[in-house]
Image 1: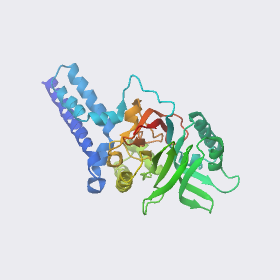
Image 2: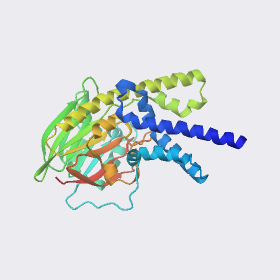
Image 3: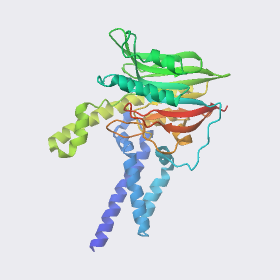
Image 4: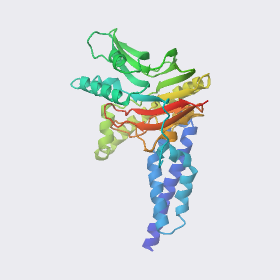
Length: 365
C-alpha cells in the first residue's frame, strides 16, 4: 500500500515536471508583452531538463512504462536540447583562410574595481594577444580621451592585428570618458551604422560592414537590456531561504519586477535587430550579449533563419555568464546560411562577468 502510494506520488511529481518542460517549449513563441511569466518558465529549462532525465532513468531502471512520459517530452524538445548541450566526438578543423571572430562583454575592462582595474585590463589584453582574433565585438566597452587615464582603445589598436575600429558610445562622462560598444577588425571597414533602441540607455546594436577579400560581411554587435540586478537583489537570492515570509515576498516581488521589465525591453530590441537582419544585402553574423537564454522569445526572434555557431561547431555545455547568478549561455555568435563556422569555444578566463566566445568562419556562398 505504502509502496504504491509512493510510486503514484513520484509519478504525479513527474507529471508536474513534464508539464513544466512542455510549457518551456512555448516560451520562445510568446512575446513577454503578451504574457511575460512564460519567459520565467523558459528560463528554468535546465531545471525541467534534468528533472525529466532523472525520471526517465528512474522508470527505465524499474522497467516501468511511465518512463514514456519524460522520454516523450525530451524527444519533443530535441532541438532545444541541442541548444543546451552539444556532443561531438570530433569537430571539423577550420581551413587556413578562415577568419576568427570573438564576442566579449568586457565589463568596462573592470574599470570600477579601483584597486585592481589596471591589472584586470592588462590580463584582458594578454588574453586577446593569445587568442589573436581577426574581428572582435566588445560590449560594455570603455575608453577615455583623457591623457594617461586608463587607456584601452589606443592600446588595443597598437598591439593587435584588428586595428580598424567602429566604436559608438551610449554614455559620455566629463566630456572624455566613453561607455558603449566597439567592433575591431583586421579587415577594412567599409560602412558603419547603428540601431538606436529609442529611450533605452546603455543598449545599442552596431552594424559594421567588413570587406574580406572580394566579399563583404555585415557584423551586428548587440548588447540587449539587462535585468539590472542590484547588490540587494543578489543578497536576497543568496539567503532567501533564511528570511521571514514578508522579506521573501518583498524580495521576490523586486526580482520579478526587474525580470519582467528586462524581458519586455529585450523583446522590442530583438524585433528591431531581426528587421535589420532581413534588410542586409550581405552575409550576416550577429554577435553579442543578449542577456537572455536560448529558450527565450528574444533569442528566437533574432536567431530566426540563422545558425547558432555553438550548435554548429561547439561541444559540451556552454555557460557564457560568469556572474553570481544566473549561470547561463547568454552570449551568442549567430550567422546566416552564407557563412560556415568552425571550432566554437568559450574562453574560460574570469576577467569579466562574461566569458569571451570565439569561432572561426568562412563565406561559403
